[in-house]
Length: 256
Image (cartoon, rainbow, N blue to C red; front, side, top):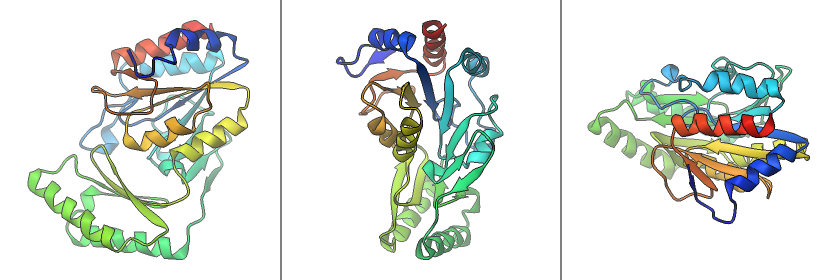
């Protein structure tokens, strides 16, 4: 583990965590708890992570997830029950009761996303398309260099006709067009409002997680999880899977 913000020593956070009346651990999935794979359906938790999450939940830590995946799809991959999930970068919310709600979409935005998806399929890249509520994602991790170049050109063409209510964002392994107004940061803000007494940490890996890092309460801990560091608002950088397991184990020790 390596501190990225010397003004926020990890030792001080563990002390606050031990004394906190409530603890909230918020997690991304792909690239954070599970390594990236060429096929998204193959992404599984790093070895040893599932039992740690189960023990943390049993010990009293509230665990929530904020992910680019659809909320119900992610729920089916988790070893936990009764966790709150924000899916599709905050466009969806799956409550602990199982109730799924989605942010409303303007007709113009929905129409553009539908047309963009059809355009991607017509170009022969249905395998690269991921359609979620309020978003269209293009994944090129499994493509050869020629395929990636063609998808990059396709993204450029689509972006030229992007209406004001949507924006584009690159992520690790692709590009996504999505509706404005909801992101991982708004999800963190909602969680913080529902848990005002909780000490929070958020673990994420990608550029899309920077919104979440920025939205954490002042005493929260932002943790960048990836094999190599990058410029980030995070306070701490750790390499998966060993340092990730170490962090979760230290959380458990501090709250035991």
